[in-house]
Image 1: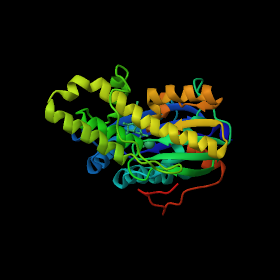
Image 2: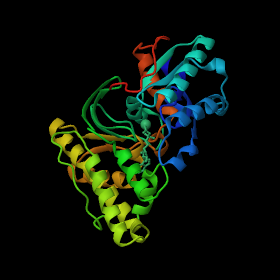
Image 3: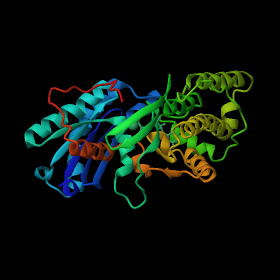
Image 4: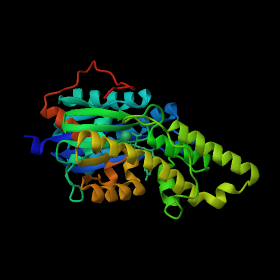
Length: 339
Ligand code: KG4
Ligand code: ZN
């Protein structure tokens, strides 16, 4: 049954409206509508995000069904993002998913967005190998930074998290100070390729254990840039590549230090990364070096499954369905859904 199960996944937790159709674990379509409206504000404006989801949701679901070359009546299950995320955005996806499931008279499952980022590793794709259990997953996105022990599809334990900003936020906020548009992570990644990682040094957080903190680093970057601009108004233009390389190196070093600690603590040698920041080329190359040095097995998701997408929601929904964990229609979207 599960091999041929047709799942519609719906994702609307932040600023991407996405719908995907999976047959079993194979993606038939994965449509994502980005919201460029936020670029001019340097970050996501929640009210504008929910309005854009309202406009996008029907055309996006419609294209996902058409691209998959199926009929609406072929869908066996609908999976939607329950949280965490922006409440107004989540409500658009969850209300739509509930109405469609009711209309089609098919089962509905609600999915935790952060768990879905991890389960994206189990989508069938020739360029993606599936992790063996147990594995450690470093989930790094615009809203979260977590280290998770994944024991099974539906059995995960978070062993480290951020105490303030997320890693993606550290990228985006630094980019904003550099005058780069939102989201800044991919731009910092791009400019860093031609820069020197040791050109500038910034304050390192001193957090015990497996938790993270990025707010001190953000302040240190801000102070360095503001004081340099006072003596040279062209400081950023002259040093953009070096600034990006040094900022990226600082953020990624914090992530790698903690993943190293987690490996020592848990003795788990299967390591995966997930979430938008896992698209970062420096994180990917440093992790590959670490894998060689420490004899680790590493799992890096295909680029299109790193940032927010509905294929990951559909696959996570499929595993909840196998566990008979269905959503209740009275269940509400939850901005702060816990792990
Ligand atoms: O998972 P995601 O798409 O959305 C959330 O759930 O937050 O992650 C978005 C985050 C943004 O902060 C973005 O700047 C960051 O992922 N990001 C990157 C890269 N691509 C996306 N950060 C660093 N390097 C990248 N190449
Ligand atoms: Zn995400």
